[in-house]
Length: 369
Image 1 (cartoon, rainbow, N blue to C red):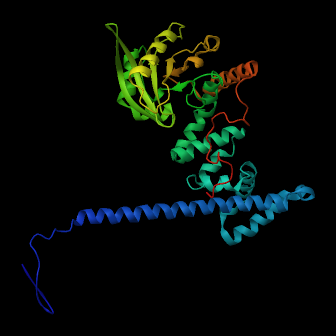
Image 2 (tube, one colour):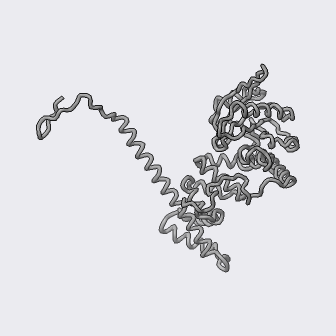
Image 3 (cartoon, rainbow, N blue to C red):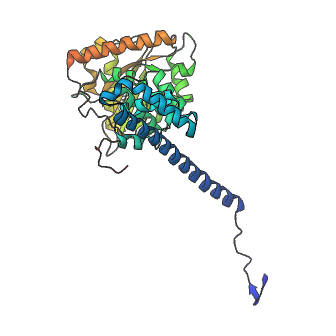
């Protein structure tokens, strides 16, 4: 094909590939959206750090020592002055919240890291949480899982921290079950199972909507298979569910049981774990661990049997939740019992020990994040 130019005729091959205009458009859109998201994230981070710095400065300069007596008056006056210039963003209640923010999150490096993912709205939902460990748990979880504000509120309202600590109370340093992996109880109301359901119904619901189950199950899990067949001496055995945890580099066997936990379940899970260790464990992976899910956990029996030393955890699952008040009462009661159990045993590491809590700045403050 001939193409006319100012200098004469230029030969252009018919085989010159045509430009995929659709692909070009999509790629440019991806660039724009990615950069817009980063710009928004940067702006959000700066706003959050601004609120922290304002709160920290007011708290340290204006409200310390003798000035604390008339601190409220100072905040009220400052609020009026700032509102005249910047609007309702600096109402007195909002400035008070900024001060509380700086007090509860005193480390600016942690705030800077968290603010890359968490908005000011996230932090406002974290401020009412009384326990520092719980606050850090929810903040870290939202940061790592990229949770929006709605997801964070759901985690808080469904007592994810307390349920993790209840599960931890069955684990010792000598055991083979890592800390902070499981929860107790698991809230499986998400599947809407009707009364008198069977184990097969629950298993089917989990497999059908495994994504929602993993959100409840925890971060880092991936579904592997259902009804895993194990053949030994001509006998067939079937494990209900098999997952893999990428962070732990372990297979995780899950057995579903209706009714109360029975000591006989231990032998069944031990067999599954030994079989998986021998025939399914890959080079570089850690030994498989197991989770037995029951409608009633029999926690005293579980403590007596020291199942964690065999790589086995047990937890309840609830398919129907009580009212909010009753739910909080029941979780609070189980959580208190778990704390008493820890006090009796006195072997679980304190909050100042490593206890395998991988917060975002675990390697101290050496990083430049």
